[in-house]
Picture 1 (cartoon, rainbow, N blue to C red):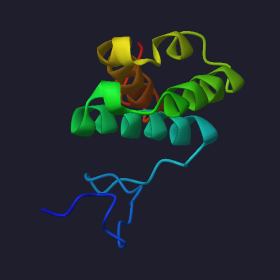
Picture 2: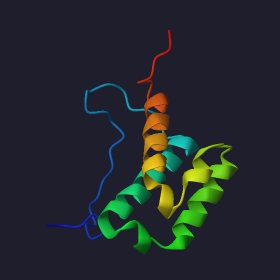
Picture 3: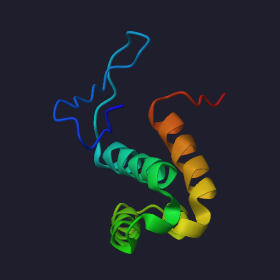
Picture 4: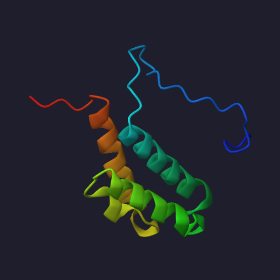
Length: 100
């Protein structure tokens, strides 16, 4: 199995699987993607082995973007809460959540 950090040809496509238009990559979407990467890293190596620097940097980045609840959940003890918030935020960014 080839690990994602080993592959040099890791191309990320922003095109949705359903063939629709790609969502623009905003600073918020980029940040949410980085948070998803962090959650994946926790699943891969364990949350205790993720460097504190990564948690700290992403907390600071969340605060600089004006996010209110996400910075408080960026830490090894709250990975499940963080993943729920990130998925909810991404769904709102992609227009998957519709309010009537």
